Image (cartoon, rainbow, N blue to C red; front, side, top):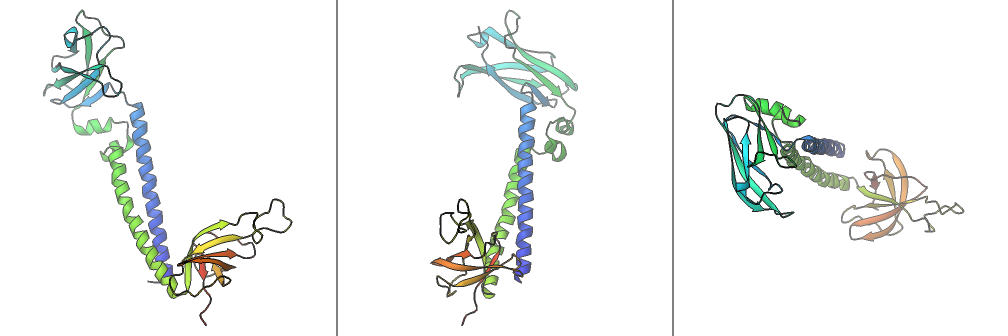
Length: 281
């Protein structure tokens, strides 16, 4: 494959990968917004389901025998199971279970904690159960756009997309290796970094300019083994397509296969531009 087709394929992989990452971020935002607006005391259930409940032991209650769970419908069986110590903030919490009858009609019901004298604790501990006819109804009642559309948790969807994003990333890596090989055959190398020279360097500042305005950039590229460049060698800087001459650059440092050069004439070079080596003599 030619350099142009390889570069086009890598750009396509980059666009696809960025699109997936945007979708990942959107899914996370969707999940956070949904969680922020969701009432933790409102549960969407189906007839026949059971759900675990847990809250701090109300003030004034020392044992489970001091409180009781009351359901608004006899088709809901609610009971306490045990007390336990909170992991993060300590204190005593209760754990219980509510079980819905298989023939419980669709509608809204409540399960609340009361003292044995019939008064409700303050703050109140009351759950609202919204019983739906089927799973689709529960899905459509969700505050998450992704859950309503795809039937998935937004966080699970984000995890799937993140795994999928590894594909264009891997493809981009492979294409970059092939691009480097193709460019070496053309005596070129991709510029992977470009940075302004410090204002106080003699060769990087305009004489008499206020504050030492930078006029040159340092560029970095790896032409591979056998490049035969030496400090002082001149290379041509081309655009990303390798068609337009932007500037020339003087090699200033060579470390193994990594070359640093100083762009001449004040041209501004972006990473992704190409450095063309002089023809071998």
